[in-house]
Structure formats: structure tokens, C-alpha cells
Length: 342
Image 1: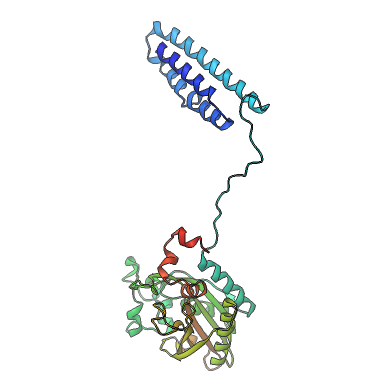
Image 2: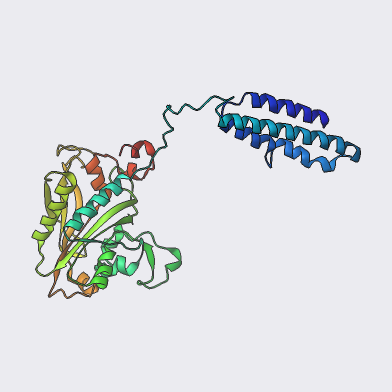
């Protein structure tokens, strides 16, 4: 062990002679003199030596430790006075630490929240794990309704035997917050609900199982389709910075009557046709219509006195239109090569 200690002493002195900066010196001190350092480990083995060896080895080990510690301290003083080691060049550029930024979906969501807030809408939130009652029945979609075929999917197993008010599923749209907000605030009411929703979808360039949606609701006296069109045109112009061509066509949604599909002229191809718009020049943007009387009643509102419009659109699809993204799957991919472009 005496030879081992002498070799270690020579090795440490060689490494100290090659030290170029305080960081390397600190690493070397930890490596050999730290609590788990090589010299410290040798000292801990003294108890296993024979009595006649222990004194000689212990004396040499302590001498080496003091010698090395003194050398390290001497070099530390030299560093402080900028002698013995290469000085730090303070004119060199610093190390740039990468900074994160908002996801493109978050960027557009916050812009929309600002736009709708300026129009007098509040921003509401609701649970992603929703009851079957709020997700379906209160929105005029009873258990035997065919509209459930597209959405009756991600249920929580332990609640299968519960009644509709307690059985839970991942929400398939943000519309349940309509009912919750009517019960919470009453009317008149203007709100939007941004949030994540879940669908059992066959994924492709336009469809994902997890995406973001924004719900809009306005309830007051004498609300009509004209109010819906006016609000839609206002926020689309604000988000895109120009007038956007839209069209309304009849569409069926159980929670509105009458119901409409609102389409945008495809901004990716300029209306000439591409895979995202299925070569039609139009992209289905949102479902909308006047709130169904049954939904108003479920929210505790008298449909004879009040009316309203509601709409829901895929925030993710709006992001695609805004930034010219041709595949929805990129947005939830987590691929930094893609996300860092925004």
C-alpha cells in the first residue's frame, strides 16, 4: 500500500501541473481529496491493515494528504491574484443558454382570449374528466342519440356502472362548460372556453385523438344568427389581420337549432385545392347555431325570454391556417425541430 500511495501522490502532482482553470482544480480536489475521493478511500482502509503496517501507512497517507492540500491551496491563491493559471478573458462571448417559448397553439389561444375579452366575453375553464351528464345529456344528446356514435368513447372503467351524472369520461368537446357557466353565472352571458378535448379518431393530416378547441357562447334577449356572423368575422379578421371569406351551410348539432357549419376559404392553397381542404378550397372551421331550448333549460335559463348562439372550433386547425401547417400531427409531436420555428 505504501507503493500505491506514492504512485497516487505522483499522479496527483502531474495532474495539478496541467490544471488550466479553477474549475479543473475544483474537480481534481474533489476527485482525490473529497469525501469520496481516492485518497480518502485509502485512509478508510487503514483499519483493515495489520497493526505493524497501519502506523507507517497512516503516517505516509497523512503526509501526502497535507502535501496535496497545501499545493491545492497555493494554486487557489495564485488564481485569486491571476498568477500561475491562464487568466479569464472577460471579452469572450458568454455561454448562451437556450430559452423556451410558447407553443404555437398557446400563442393563438392567448391572442383569441385577448380578442374575445375586448368583445366583452369572459374566459372560462372546465374539467377534462367530465361527467356523462354534462358532456352529453345536458347538451340534448341522450344515451340513445345517434350523435354519440362519433364521441361515445374514452370512459373511465371504474365508473361504468354509475348513473349518467356520475359516470366519467374524457370530454369530447368543451361544450359542457356552457351548462356549468349558465348555472354559475346566469344570464345574460358571454364566454369562450379554450381547452383540450379527446376523440377516438383515425389520425391523418386533419384529425388527431387529442387536440384543442374553443367554445363560444352568447346568451341575451333577441340574439340571432346575425350576431353570430358578426362576432365570427370580427375575431377572424383580428387573428389573421385581414378579411377572411366564410360560408355558412346547414349542419346538424343536437345542442343548437338551427345549426350551421362555418367554413373558411383555405389559406394554405388560397382556395385552389390541397390535401388539407380535400381539394375543395374550403376548410370546415366550426359548428355553430342558436342554442337549443333544451340546453337553455338544462342551464336554468328560460328559452321563452332568452336566446343565444354557440360555436365550437378546433383551435389546432386555426393554428394550422395561421402558420401554414399542413399536418395536424406535428403540433402534438413534441418535435423541437418543428416547434422551434415558432
